Length: 326
Picture 1 (tube, rainbow, N blue to C red):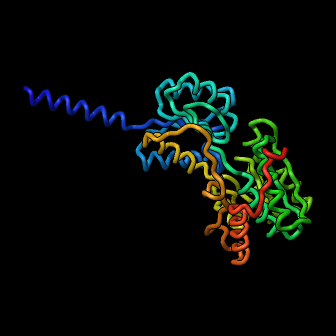
Picture 2: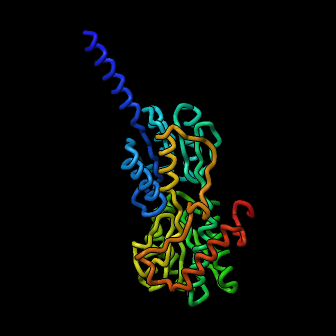
Picture 3: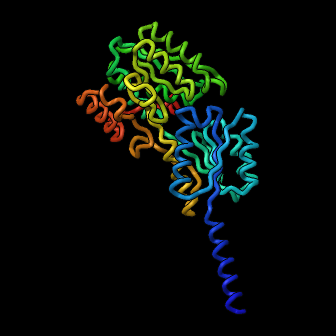
């Protein structure tokens, strides 16, 4: 009898350990959804990597509109998820409100700053990566005219624009940069038809390289570039594969790495709140060079891009930051 009791107690204790070891992660994507091939896709891939490699339990939801965000975060917290991750600045208010109500739940937000003991803010030096995108555009432009198309007109995307313009001017001070924004609401992230119209307009003004920071709307820009045989530059995820020979490079914003590392910190019981920044020095942002675009770059051009990157990291090149100069 004593042996049986000990076995039951041990088995019960072991089972409890097994249950408690399963970390539950809730991922709240913005309206672009996991298939935007950009910002949300990168976040989703980081979470799926954690699911595969760390054995966590993952559930994701896609916000239909900004009014649903607080409810989505609250639902995860009420179900006692260990970590709830919000993707995009639009989720700042939702995270602020729900994090206060559920202090035992860990929260993280990408592209937003929330000051709370249970919230980690994941921020990126987009202007550094965009500088490289600008340098690439200027190096490859034959007309001296390049374009930038942002999604929603917000300070974050203005930061992309300012870094891009600086990179263009660094390589070719006489170059012209044409700028457009798809819109001023969340719909701007998922309107490829309008983005294509803007790209065609820029091409009509002699732009022969266009960089987008427009989420799923970027598909329209790629289509316009392919139709008119110019270059486009992708953003966030590596988008070189989408239209090989058309996508010159992609400005990588490693949301996948930030999401994975945050999940791992919870899994390892090492979660820390506060701001974590990702820049060129830690490969949090970068430019994409792979089998899909390698034929577009000569060895000297690639070397020049890497040299510019090193100079930014060392501080020799000072990249203007919209947040600090607006």
